[in-house]
Image (cartoon, rainbow, N blue to C red; front, side):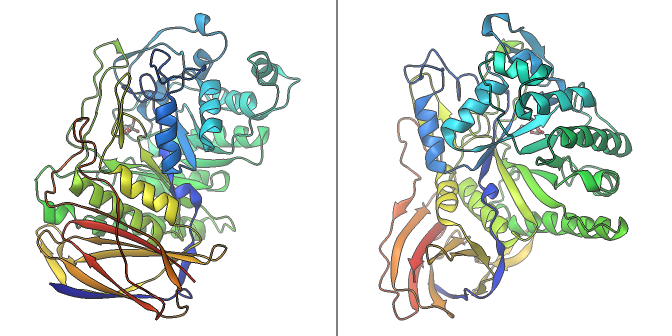
Length: 496
Ligand code: AHR
């Protein structure tokens, strides 16, 4: 059995953890909205058609914000199709996913859903077929008082008070040839700047997100990021990153070492942010928004064959995916000085930890690490020191066998430590050593583990991979010992 030590010093603060790192993304794609969030025909639907069981599962994930309505869908979406009396809303062909969009769910329904979830809405404006005027109109509709056209329209639709939507994405993946209305970096930078200006003039308190490269594999990466930021810097608050992890090669060792690449992606863009801030002589800061992240490779279907709510990209997540997700969230904590928003793509049915049938709901393996992080990580991220053996990988050379992050919440006097054991064969006994403060007790400890990296949950066996409570011995002498089985994720919280 291998041995390791993790040193935790509550003085070694990386940064405050932004709660928005625990956010999600809901797109008009497949069965995310229709049949997922909104399903009036389900026995679980409330009076508004929202799925109560989905809301409950999402509340347990403690999502702080939800990005909406896309995604690629956004770039062909006329938001005015989705407001007003439902029987007058148009049916449209959605060119992004070759699906029929009924518009029975739109901006007002989404904002109601966010209130039910107690999550901040993060709305996107269409930079593909949409104009800067359409973008400004949506801000007016959501945030202006009554007395002019769009505030009055909102009031007629039943919402006299402004919604006060704070977070706004200025387009989606505008560098991609798959995007409706793809733009060059220069064109997009200019359009985003002009849209953001108008949006801010309607409501100076909003915060905007610029579209970064849609992936580090794009030929324009990272020039796209530099150019668009240089143009729009003063009018944006965040710059987006998107990344979908894959294991096409079925190389589990490399897959479980993906953090090297994820950290590199953040570091490169953090470098671009510093460069542009210096070049523009700006006093203003722009942070990173990882507003699409997840594992996505087993089901890439994106053609709805012109049907309503088709089954698209209904990825089923296994244990190794859950361990990648856990490490990704470790990266969020380790990079919390520059990374302020992260949206899991997506939250129901489409590349999601939750799958529904008309009357059932299944939580996949990835649900559990997301829940543990979102409930336990708060306050400051800590720079922990880890002494452990290393494991060999084809893709990333040798990497530490443990992937670790920690948080410290001053208000509650609690400290959480998150550890993935990447080894497929070896258990690791890890000593936790608290250096500045001595904990008095363990308040919770959970493990997600299994012997088969491909193990999944199913409607027949829904509890194959879940978070199980574990026993931890006394920590009041400032040390604790955990046994980490191979292929495991452990989260422990102590109080001081
Ligand atoms: O989340 C699915 C799709 O992935 C989004 O629509 C798009 O932004 C990305 O390519």
